[in-house]
Length: 497
Image (cartoon, rainbow, N blue to C red; front, side):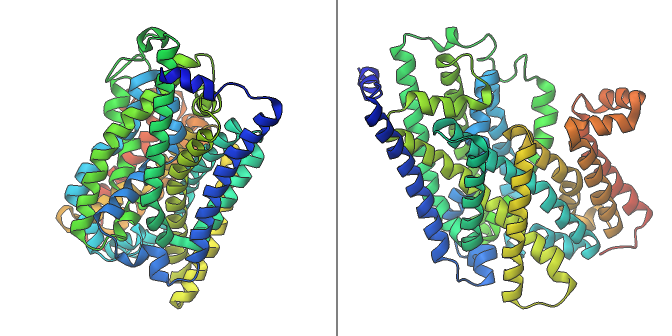
Protein backbone atom coordinates (compact mmCIF):
# COMPACT_ATOMS: atom_id res chain seq x y z
CA UNK A 1 0.00 0.00 0.00
CA UNK A 2 1.39 3.47 -0.85
CA UNK A 3 0.55 4.94 2.53
CA UNK A 4 2.48 2.16 4.28
CA UNK A 5 5.54 2.92 2.17
CA UNK A 6 5.18 6.60 3.04
CA UNK A 7 4.88 5.79 6.73
CA UNK A 8 8.18 3.89 6.53
CA UNK A 9 9.82 6.84 4.79
CA UNK A 10 8.54 9.16 7.51
CA UNK A 11 9.36 6.96 10.49
CA UNK A 12 11.34 8.89 13.06
CA UNK A 13 15.08 8.35 12.58
CA UNK A 14 17.58 8.50 15.44
CA UNK A 15 18.70 11.97 16.56
CA UNK A 16 21.69 12.28 14.23
CA UNK A 17 19.78 11.08 11.19
CA UNK A 18 16.89 13.40 12.11
CA UNK A 19 19.26 16.36 12.09
CA UNK A 20 20.68 15.18 8.79
CA UNK A 21 17.17 15.04 7.31
CA UNK A 22 16.48 18.61 8.44
CA UNK A 23 19.74 19.78 6.90
CA UNK A 24 18.85 18.00 3.66
CA UNK A 25 15.51 19.82 3.42
CA UNK A 26 17.14 23.14 4.27
CA UNK A 27 19.80 22.49 1.63
CA UNK A 28 17.10 22.01 -1.02
CA UNK A 29 15.49 25.35 -0.13
CA UNK A 30 18.88 27.11 -0.01
CA UNK A 31 19.73 25.65 -3.42
CA UNK A 32 16.45 26.97 -4.86
CA UNK A 33 16.99 30.43 -3.36
CA UNK A 34 20.60 30.49 -4.58
CA UNK A 35 19.51 29.54 -8.09
CA UNK A 36 17.01 32.41 -8.14
CA UNK A 37 19.62 34.86 -6.89
CA UNK A 38 22.05 33.61 -9.54
CA UNK A 39 19.47 34.24 -12.30
CA UNK A 40 18.95 37.75 -10.98
CA UNK A 41 22.70 38.39 -10.70
CA UNK A 42 23.35 37.28 -14.28
CA UNK A 43 20.65 39.67 -15.53
CA UNK A 44 21.83 42.64 -13.49
CA UNK A 45 23.33 44.49 -16.48
CA UNK A 46 20.37 45.22 -18.71
CA UNK A 47 18.57 48.09 -20.39
CA UNK A 48 15.58 49.93 -18.99
CA UNK A 49 13.25 48.25 -21.50
CA UNK A 50 14.44 44.84 -20.32
CA UNK A 51 14.02 45.75 -16.68
CA UNK A 52 10.59 47.39 -17.08
CA UNK A 53 8.86 45.26 -19.76
CA UNK A 54 11.27 42.39 -20.62
CA UNK A 55 11.82 43.88 -24.10
CA UNK A 56 8.17 43.08 -25.04
CA UNK A 57 9.26 39.88 -26.79
CA UNK A 58 7.55 36.92 -25.11
CA UNK A 59 5.03 34.52 -26.63
CA UNK A 60 1.88 32.84 -25.35
CA UNK A 61 3.47 30.07 -23.25
CA UNK A 62 5.73 32.41 -21.30
CA UNK A 63 3.11 35.12 -20.75
CA UNK A 64 0.40 32.58 -19.80
CA UNK A 65 2.73 30.94 -17.28
CA UNK A 66 3.72 34.32 -15.88
CA UNK A 67 0.08 35.39 -15.49
CA UNK A 68 -0.85 32.11 -13.84
CA UNK A 69 1.99 31.93 -11.35
CA UNK A 70 1.48 35.62 -10.51
CA UNK A 71 -2.14 34.85 -9.62
CA UNK A 72 -1.07 31.91 -7.45
CA UNK A 73 1.27 33.69 -5.09
CA UNK A 74 0.59 33.97 -1.38
CA UNK A 75 -3.07 33.33 -2.20
CA UNK A 76 -2.22 29.80 -3.28
CA UNK A 77 0.49 28.79 -0.86
CA UNK A 78 -1.19 29.82 2.34
CA UNK A 79 -4.39 31.78 1.68
CA UNK A 80 -6.57 29.36 -0.27
CA UNK A 81 -5.32 26.31 1.64
CA UNK A 82 -6.16 28.04 4.93
CA UNK A 83 -9.58 29.07 3.55
CA UNK A 84 -10.22 25.46 2.54
CA UNK A 85 -9.20 24.37 6.04
CA UNK A 86 -11.32 27.05 7.76
CA UNK A 87 -14.53 27.05 5.72
CA UNK A 88 -14.27 24.29 3.13
CA UNK A 89 -15.08 24.24 -0.57
CA UNK A 90 -16.25 27.86 -0.71
CA UNK A 91 -12.61 28.87 -0.18
CA UNK A 92 -12.14 28.12 -3.87
CA UNK A 93 -14.00 31.30 -4.79
CA UNK A 94 -10.96 33.44 -4.02
CA UNK A 95 -8.99 32.28 -7.08
CA UNK A 96 -12.12 31.40 -9.09
CA UNK A 97 -13.26 35.02 -8.88
CA UNK A 98 -9.95 35.99 -10.45
CA UNK A 99 -10.46 33.41 -13.21
CA UNK A 100 -13.90 34.85 -14.00
CA UNK A 101 -12.46 38.39 -14.16
CA UNK A 102 -9.68 37.32 -16.54
CA UNK A 103 -12.27 36.34 -19.18
CA UNK A 104 -13.56 39.90 -19.85
CA UNK A 105 -9.99 41.10 -19.40
CA UNK A 106 -8.98 38.86 -22.30
CA UNK A 107 -11.93 39.86 -24.47
CA UNK A 108 -11.92 43.61 -23.95
CA UNK A 109 -8.67 44.85 -22.39
CA UNK A 110 -5.61 42.61 -22.77
CA UNK A 111 -4.98 43.32 -26.44
CA UNK A 112 -5.74 47.03 -26.10
CA UNK A 113 -3.44 47.38 -23.10
CA UNK A 114 -0.54 45.69 -24.90
CA UNK A 115 -1.04 47.67 -28.10
CA UNK A 116 -0.69 50.95 -26.22
CA UNK A 117 3.05 50.27 -25.89
CA UNK A 118 3.34 51.86 -22.44
CA UNK A 119 5.38 50.77 -19.42
CA UNK A 120 2.88 51.07 -16.54
CA UNK A 121 -0.81 51.38 -15.74
CA UNK A 122 -0.40 55.06 -14.72
CA UNK A 123 1.04 55.67 -18.23
CA UNK A 124 -2.44 54.79 -19.51
CA UNK A 125 -3.99 57.28 -17.09
CA UNK A 126 -1.44 59.92 -18.10
CA UNK A 127 -2.41 59.57 -21.75
CA UNK A 128 -6.09 59.82 -20.91
CA UNK A 129 -6.14 62.47 -18.18
CA UNK A 130 -2.67 64.00 -17.73
CA UNK A 131 -0.26 64.14 -14.80
CA UNK A 132 -2.87 65.51 -12.38
CA UNK A 133 -4.41 62.04 -12.39
CA UNK A 134 -1.48 59.73 -13.16
CA UNK A 135 0.82 61.02 -10.39
CA UNK A 136 -1.62 60.58 -7.45
CA UNK A 137 -2.72 57.28 -9.02
CA UNK A 138 0.89 56.08 -9.10
CA UNK A 139 1.36 57.06 -5.46
CA UNK A 140 -1.81 55.21 -4.50
CA UNK A 141 -0.61 52.06 -6.30
CA UNK A 142 2.75 52.21 -4.53
CA UNK A 143 1.01 52.53 -1.15
CA UNK A 144 -1.60 49.85 -1.76
CA UNK A 145 0.79 47.36 -3.31
CA UNK A 146 2.92 47.43 -0.17
CA UNK A 147 0.08 45.41 1.36
CA UNK A 148 0.10 42.95 -1.55
CA UNK A 149 3.89 42.54 -1.39
CA UNK A 150 3.68 42.18 2.40
CA UNK A 151 1.26 39.28 1.92
CA UNK A 152 3.86 37.42 -0.13
CA UNK A 153 6.51 38.02 2.53
CA UNK A 154 4.14 36.83 5.26
CA UNK A 155 3.40 33.66 3.33
CA UNK A 156 7.06 32.86 2.78
CA UNK A 157 7.96 33.53 6.40
CA UNK A 158 5.03 31.46 7.69
CA UNK A 159 6.09 28.59 5.47
CA UNK A 160 9.74 28.62 6.58
CA UNK A 161 9.02 29.11 10.28
CA UNK A 162 6.29 26.46 10.23
CA UNK A 163 8.47 23.77 8.66
CA UNK A 164 12.03 24.53 9.79
CA UNK A 165 13.47 25.31 13.24
CA UNK A 166 13.52 29.09 12.76
CA UNK A 167 11.27 31.69 14.39
CA UNK A 168 8.94 33.90 12.38
CA UNK A 169 10.80 37.23 12.60
CA UNK A 170 14.15 35.93 11.26
CA UNK A 171 12.26 33.94 8.60
CA UNK A 172 10.47 37.12 7.52
CA UNK A 173 13.81 38.89 7.26
CA UNK A 174 15.34 36.11 5.14
CA UNK A 175 12.34 36.02 2.79
CA UNK A 176 12.26 39.81 2.41
CA UNK A 177 15.99 40.05 1.67
CA UNK A 178 15.95 37.25 -0.93
CA UNK A 179 12.85 38.66 -2.64
CA UNK A 180 14.25 42.18 -2.80
CA UNK A 181 17.78 41.28 -3.93
CA UNK A 182 16.61 38.89 -6.65
CA UNK A 183 14.13 41.42 -8.03
CA UNK A 184 16.60 44.31 -7.65
CA UNK A 185 19.06 42.55 -9.93
CA UNK A 186 16.75 40.85 -12.42
CA UNK A 187 13.73 43.08 -13.06
CA UNK A 188 10.94 41.93 -15.37
CA UNK A 189 13.35 40.09 -17.66
CA UNK A 190 14.31 37.60 -14.95
CA UNK A 191 10.73 37.43 -13.72
CA UNK A 192 9.32 36.29 -17.05
CA UNK A 193 12.24 33.94 -17.69
CA UNK A 194 11.86 32.13 -14.37
CA UNK A 195 8.06 32.18 -14.04
CA UNK A 196 7.67 29.39 -16.62
CA UNK A 197 9.89 27.00 -14.66
CA UNK A 198 8.64 28.12 -11.27
CA UNK A 199 5.11 27.28 -12.38
CA UNK A 200 6.14 23.67 -13.07
CA UNK A 201 8.00 23.48 -9.76
CA UNK A 202 4.91 24.78 -7.95
CA UNK A 203 2.54 22.35 -9.68
CA UNK A 204 4.90 19.44 -9.01
CA UNK A 205 5.12 20.27 -5.32
CA UNK A 206 1.36 20.74 -5.10
CA UNK A 207 0.71 17.31 -6.64
CA UNK A 208 3.25 15.65 -4.35
CA UNK A 209 1.59 17.14 -1.26
CA UNK A 210 -1.93 16.28 -2.43
CA UNK A 211 -1.01 12.64 -3.16
CA UNK A 212 0.78 12.13 0.14
CA UNK A 213 -2.01 13.71 2.19
CA UNK A 214 -4.64 11.72 0.31
CA UNK A 215 -2.68 8.54 0.96
CA UNK A 216 -2.45 9.43 4.66
CA UNK A 217 -6.19 10.09 4.81
CA UNK A 218 -7.03 6.77 3.19
CA UNK A 219 -4.43 4.93 5.24
CA UNK A 220 -5.90 6.36 8.43
CA UNK A 221 -9.36 5.14 7.47
CA UNK A 222 -10.73 8.68 7.44
CA UNK A 223 -13.64 9.87 5.35
CA UNK A 224 -13.47 13.51 4.26
CA UNK A 225 -17.22 13.91 4.68
CA UNK A 226 -17.08 12.54 8.19
CA UNK A 227 -13.80 14.17 9.24
CA UNK A 228 -14.50 17.82 8.35
CA UNK A 229 -17.09 20.04 10.06
CA UNK A 230 -20.65 20.27 8.78
CA UNK A 231 -20.96 22.71 5.90
CA UNK A 232 -17.36 22.37 4.72
CA UNK A 233 -18.49 20.51 1.60
CA UNK A 234 -21.32 22.95 0.86
CA UNK A 235 -21.03 24.74 -2.48
CA UNK A 236 -21.40 27.38 -3.92
CA UNK A 237 -22.31 29.00 -0.58
CA UNK A 238 -22.22 27.95 3.05
CA UNK A 239 -23.00 29.35 6.48
CA UNK A 240 -19.59 31.04 6.55
CA UNK A 241 -19.70 32.30 2.97
CA UNK A 242 -23.07 33.52 1.72
CA UNK A 243 -24.57 35.04 -1.41
CA UNK A 244 -23.52 38.55 -0.39
CA UNK A 245 -19.86 37.50 -0.37
CA UNK A 246 -20.22 35.54 -3.60
CA UNK A 247 -22.18 38.09 -5.64
CA UNK A 248 -21.08 41.43 -4.16
CA UNK A 249 -17.96 41.43 -1.99
CA UNK A 250 -15.73 39.00 -3.89
CA UNK A 251 -16.52 40.31 -7.40
CA UNK A 252 -15.75 43.88 -6.33
CA UNK A 253 -12.85 43.46 -3.91
CA UNK A 254 -11.19 40.31 -5.27
CA UNK A 255 -12.28 40.28 -8.93
CA UNK A 256 -11.62 43.85 -10.02
CA UNK A 257 -7.82 43.73 -9.44
CA UNK A 258 -7.76 40.83 -11.93
CA UNK A 259 -9.64 42.94 -14.45
CA UNK A 260 -7.68 46.15 -13.91
CA UNK A 261 -4.50 45.42 -11.94
CA UNK A 262 -1.00 46.88 -12.33
CA UNK A 263 0.72 43.52 -11.80
CA UNK A 264 -1.40 41.71 -14.41
CA UNK A 265 -1.03 44.66 -16.79
CA UNK A 266 2.73 44.30 -16.34
CA UNK A 267 2.52 40.70 -17.63
CA UNK A 268 0.64 41.92 -20.69
CA UNK A 269 3.23 44.64 -21.37
CA UNK A 270 5.84 41.87 -21.75
CA UNK A 271 3.88 40.09 -24.52
CA UNK A 272 5.11 40.43 -28.09
CA UNK A 273 1.70 41.62 -29.38
CA UNK A 274 -1.95 42.09 -28.49
CA UNK A 275 -3.04 38.68 -29.80
CA UNK A 276 -0.53 36.99 -27.49
CA UNK A 277 -1.85 38.99 -24.55
CA UNK A 278 -5.45 37.95 -25.26
CA UNK A 279 -4.64 34.26 -25.65
CA UNK A 280 -2.56 34.28 -22.48
CA UNK A 281 -5.42 35.74 -20.43
CA UNK A 282 -7.81 32.99 -21.58
CA UNK A 283 -5.29 30.21 -20.97
CA UNK A 284 -4.53 31.52 -17.47
CA UNK A 285 -8.26 31.82 -16.66
CA UNK A 286 -8.87 28.20 -17.69
CA UNK A 287 -5.85 26.87 -15.82
CA UNK A 288 -6.82 28.60 -12.57
CA UNK A 289 -9.93 26.44 -12.16
CA UNK A 290 -8.40 22.96 -11.59
CA UNK A 291 -5.51 24.37 -9.55
CA UNK A 292 -7.95 26.27 -7.33
CA UNK A 293 -9.97 23.13 -6.56
CA UNK A 294 -6.78 21.18 -5.91
CA UNK A 295 -5.65 23.80 -3.40
CA UNK A 296 -8.94 23.93 -1.52
CA UNK A 297 -9.01 20.11 -1.49
CA UNK A 298 -5.57 20.22 0.10
CA UNK A 299 -7.05 22.39 2.84
CA UNK A 300 -9.86 19.86 3.40
CA UNK A 301 -7.38 16.96 3.60
CA UNK A 302 -5.32 18.85 6.16
CA UNK A 303 -8.49 19.58 8.17
CA UNK A 304 -9.28 15.85 8.22
CA UNK A 305 -5.76 14.92 9.36
CA UNK A 306 -5.07 17.88 11.70
CA UNK A 307 -8.45 19.09 12.96
CA UNK A 308 -7.36 21.40 15.79
CA UNK A 309 -4.73 23.78 14.39
CA UNK A 310 -4.95 27.47 13.43
CA UNK A 311 -6.00 27.81 9.74
CA UNK A 312 -2.99 29.97 8.86
CA UNK A 313 -0.67 27.17 9.95
CA UNK A 314 -2.46 24.46 7.95
CA UNK A 315 0.01 24.12 5.10
CA UNK A 316 3.24 24.40 7.13
CA UNK A 317 1.90 21.88 9.64
CA UNK A 318 1.03 19.41 6.88
CA UNK A 319 4.39 19.79 5.17
CA UNK A 320 6.26 19.37 8.42
CA UNK A 321 4.28 16.40 9.69
CA UNK A 322 3.31 14.45 6.59
CA UNK A 323 6.20 14.72 4.13
CA UNK A 324 9.40 12.64 4.33
CA UNK A 325 12.87 14.17 4.31
CA UNK A 326 13.93 15.42 0.89
CA UNK A 327 10.38 15.70 -0.39
CA UNK A 328 9.67 18.19 2.37
CA UNK A 329 12.40 20.49 1.07
CA UNK A 330 11.17 20.11 -2.52
CA UNK A 331 7.60 20.95 -1.46
CA UNK A 332 8.71 24.04 0.48
CA UNK A 333 10.77 25.20 -2.50
CA UNK A 334 7.75 24.61 -4.77
CA UNK A 335 5.44 26.75 -2.70
CA UNK A 336 8.15 29.38 -2.29
CA UNK A 337 8.34 29.44 -6.10
CA UNK A 338 4.70 30.52 -6.26
CA UNK A 339 5.27 33.16 -3.60
CA UNK A 340 8.46 34.40 -5.25
CA UNK A 341 6.79 34.69 -8.65
CA UNK A 342 4.03 36.87 -7.26
CA UNK A 343 6.32 38.86 -4.97
CA UNK A 344 8.84 39.75 -7.66
CA UNK A 345 6.11 40.79 -10.11
CA UNK A 346 4.34 43.05 -7.62
CA UNK A 347 7.59 44.51 -6.31
CA UNK A 348 9.14 45.39 -9.67
CA UNK A 349 5.80 46.68 -10.97
CA UNK A 350 5.23 48.98 -7.99
CA UNK A 351 8.81 50.29 -8.08
CA UNK A 352 8.61 50.93 -11.83
CA UNK A 353 5.41 52.91 -11.29
CA UNK A 354 6.88 54.91 -8.41
CA UNK A 355 10.03 55.78 -10.34
CA UNK A 356 8.64 56.40 -13.83
CA UNK A 357 5.33 58.00 -12.93
CA UNK A 358 6.08 59.90 -9.72
CA UNK A 359 9.79 60.74 -9.52
CA UNK A 360 11.05 60.82 -13.12
CA UNK A 361 8.42 63.26 -14.51
CA UNK A 362 9.71 65.99 -12.19
CA UNK A 363 12.79 66.46 -14.41
CA UNK A 364 14.27 65.14 -17.64
CA UNK A 365 16.28 61.98 -17.09
CA UNK A 366 18.11 59.49 -19.29
CA UNK A 367 17.06 55.85 -19.46
CA UNK A 368 19.98 54.77 -17.27
CA UNK A 369 19.04 57.37 -14.65
CA UNK A 370 15.41 56.22 -14.67
CA UNK A 371 16.57 52.61 -14.32
CA UNK A 372 18.66 53.60 -11.29
CA UNK A 373 15.57 55.33 -9.83
CA UNK A 374 13.54 52.16 -10.34
CA UNK A 375 16.06 50.06 -8.47
CA UNK A 376 16.28 52.60 -5.65
CA UNK A 377 12.47 52.71 -5.44
CA UNK A 378 12.43 48.92 -5.29
CA UNK A 379 14.64 48.93 -2.20
CA UNK A 380 12.41 51.53 -0.51
CA UNK A 381 9.17 49.69 -1.30
CA UNK A 382 10.71 46.38 -0.26
CA UNK A 383 11.59 47.80 3.16
CA UNK A 384 8.15 49.40 3.53
CA UNK A 385 6.45 46.12 2.63
CA UNK A 386 8.65 44.32 5.15
CA UNK A 387 7.44 46.75 7.83
CA UNK A 388 3.80 46.33 6.77
CA UNK A 389 4.22 42.55 7.00
CA UNK A 390 5.28 42.97 10.61
CA UNK A 391 2.05 44.78 11.53
CA UNK A 392 -0.68 43.14 9.41
CA UNK A 393 -2.18 39.99 10.88
CA UNK A 394 -2.61 37.33 8.23
CA UNK A 395 -2.04 36.83 4.51
CA UNK A 396 -5.57 37.30 3.21
CA UNK A 397 -6.11 40.47 5.32
CA UNK A 398 -2.89 41.93 3.88
CA UNK A 399 -4.02 41.14 0.33
CA UNK A 400 -7.49 42.55 0.91
CA UNK A 401 -6.02 45.70 2.47
CA UNK A 402 -3.94 46.33 -0.64
CA UNK A 403 -6.77 45.46 -3.01
CA UNK A 404 -9.28 47.69 -1.18
CA UNK A 405 -7.05 50.76 -1.31
CA UNK A 406 -6.28 50.18 -4.97
CA UNK A 407 -9.86 49.49 -6.02
CA UNK A 408 -11.27 52.51 -4.21
CA UNK A 409 -9.13 54.99 -6.07
CA UNK A 410 -8.09 53.51 -9.40
CA UNK A 411 -10.36 50.86 -10.89
CA UNK A 412 -13.08 53.24 -12.05
CA UNK A 413 -10.77 55.89 -13.61
CA UNK A 414 -8.71 53.17 -15.32
CA UNK A 415 -11.71 51.39 -16.82
CA UNK A 416 -13.20 54.74 -17.84
CA UNK A 417 -9.98 55.71 -19.65
CA UNK A 418 -10.68 53.08 -22.32
CA UNK A 419 -14.13 54.53 -23.01
CA UNK A 420 -13.45 58.15 -22.06
CA UNK A 421 -14.88 59.88 -25.11
CA UNK A 422 -17.93 57.63 -25.28
CA UNK A 423 -19.03 58.27 -21.70
CA UNK A 424 -17.69 61.83 -21.43
CA UNK A 425 -15.20 61.41 -18.58
CA UNK A 426 -12.95 64.39 -17.86
CA UNK A 427 -9.58 64.71 -16.18
CA UNK A 428 -11.20 66.61 -13.33
CA UNK A 429 -13.68 63.82 -12.72
CA UNK A 430 -10.94 61.20 -12.78
CA UNK A 431 -8.76 63.23 -10.40
CA UNK A 432 -11.49 63.54 -7.77
CA UNK A 433 -12.39 59.88 -8.17
CA UNK A 434 -8.76 58.94 -7.38
CA UNK A 435 -8.45 61.36 -4.45
CA UNK A 436 -11.77 60.72 -2.69
CA UNK A 437 -11.99 57.02 -3.50
CA UNK A 438 -8.39 56.40 -2.48
CA UNK A 439 -8.65 58.42 0.75
CA UNK A 440 -11.87 56.67 1.75
CA UNK A 441 -10.23 53.32 1.03
CA UNK A 442 -7.27 54.21 3.25
CA UNK A 443 -9.64 55.13 6.08
CA UNK A 444 -11.62 51.93 5.54
CA UNK A 445 -8.46 49.84 5.62
CA UNK A 446 -7.39 51.03 9.08
CA UNK A 447 -8.24 48.59 11.88
CA UNK A 448 -10.80 46.66 9.81
CA UNK A 449 -12.73 49.81 8.97
CA UNK A 450 -13.25 50.97 12.56
CA UNK A 451 -11.99 54.50 11.81
CA UNK A 452 -14.36 54.90 8.86
CA UNK A 453 -17.26 53.52 10.89
CA UNK A 454 -16.50 56.04 13.65
CA UNK A 455 -16.41 58.93 11.16
CA UNK A 456 -19.79 58.13 9.58
CA UNK A 457 -21.44 57.66 12.97
CA UNK A 458 -24.10 55.24 14.17
CA UNK A 459 -26.84 56.36 11.78
CA UNK A 460 -24.47 56.59 8.83
CA UNK A 461 -23.19 53.12 9.65
CA UNK A 462 -26.75 51.74 9.69
CA UNK A 463 -27.61 53.43 6.39
CA UNK A 464 -24.45 52.26 4.62
CA UNK A 465 -24.90 48.72 5.89
CA UNK A 466 -28.44 48.74 4.52
CA UNK A 467 -27.30 50.06 1.12
CA UNK A 468 -23.92 48.33 0.65
CA UNK A 469 -23.96 45.45 3.11
CA UNK A 470 -21.77 44.59 6.11
CA UNK A 471 -18.50 45.01 4.18
CA UNK A 472 -19.31 48.57 3.14
CA UNK A 473 -15.89 49.99 4.21
CA UNK A 474 -14.42 48.07 1.26
CA UNK A 475 -17.24 48.89 -1.17
CA UNK A 476 -17.97 52.54 -0.28
CA UNK A 477 -14.69 53.86 -1.82
CA UNK A 478 -15.51 52.23 -5.17
CA UNK A 479 -19.05 53.62 -5.02
CA UNK A 480 -17.84 57.15 -4.27
CA UNK A 481 -15.24 56.89 -7.03
CA UNK A 482 -17.93 55.98 -9.57
CA UNK A 483 -20.31 58.73 -8.43
CA UNK A 484 -17.61 61.40 -8.47
CA UNK A 485 -16.13 60.56 -11.86
CA UNK A 486 -19.57 60.82 -13.46
CA UNK A 487 -20.84 63.83 -11.49
CA UNK A 488 -17.71 65.97 -11.74
CA UNK A 489 -17.27 65.11 -15.42
CA UNK A 490 -20.85 66.19 -16.05
CA UNK A 491 -20.30 69.47 -14.21
CA UNK A 492 -16.96 70.20 -15.95
CA UNK A 493 -17.38 68.80 -19.49
CA UNK A 494 -14.67 70.93 -21.04
CA UNK A 495 -11.79 69.97 -18.71
CA UNK A 496 -10.29 66.98 -20.44
CA UNK A 497 -6.72 65.74 -20.07
